[in-house]
Length: 78
Image (cartoon, rainbow, N blue to C red; front, side, top):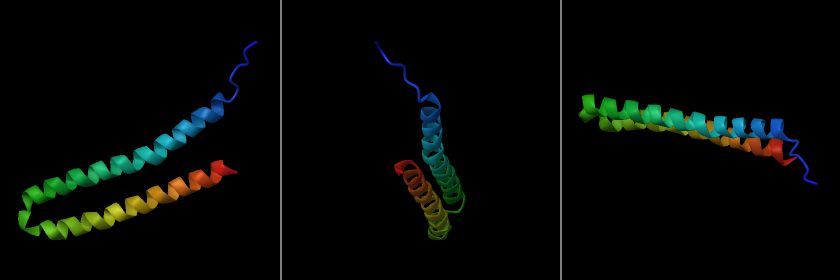
């Protein structure tokens, strides 16, 4: 006799959490990249200044992403 899978709710929570952890930083990077390309197109002489501003924002996105992954691992590893 085949046993039925009984952890559907936990599986959907896991999928939603991973989608949030991966999706939010991807969207943030896409928005920052699009804005950077538009600003460099308008102000090509300020390229270095614009890139440094975006670099700091990307660093914040990276810290957020790593923190969320670390929390996710800590919650699901116990």
